[in-house]
Amino acid sequence: MKAKMHLNPDFQVGKIDDRLYGAFLEHMGRAVYHGIYEPGHPQADEKGFRKDVTQLVRDMQVSLIRYPGGNFVSNYRWEDGVGPKDQRPRITDAAWQSVETNQVGTDEFHQWAQLVGAQVMMAVNLGTRGPEDAKNLLEYCNFPAGSQYADMRVRN
Image (tube, rainbow, N blue to C red):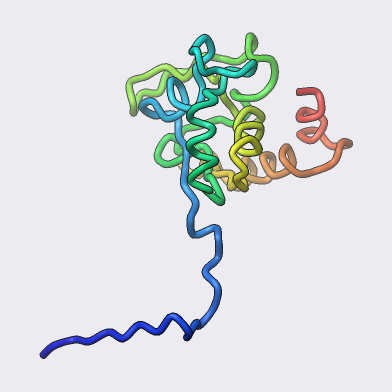
């Protein structure tokens, strides 16, 4: 039995959602540190983002980026990555046998996503946390001032 496929570019069922062409960014390997973020690098901007990497991602027209990525999020506390960088905790990640410096967090990621022209999809830790954490992150990212986590964002 042979299968046949006929393609007709004039026949469309519907438009493909641009979000299908998204990606994710996580703190493992060189994706964040020494990837998009490398203060002191000749191509780094004033915030430490690599201009060459930013331009490449912009050129690819990545529509949406999920953060903080894949397996990394399963033990991530987003609160550790906000606020003054010199006050952020350095956390050991036993699963990956590494130290997370939290120098890139929610605010920095949002800034970088704007630079590359991508929408943001925030991932939440349901591995060691839960729905309350997701609610708090939603409040931090989206609510106007006047609530605990929104006011935290405004201060940052």
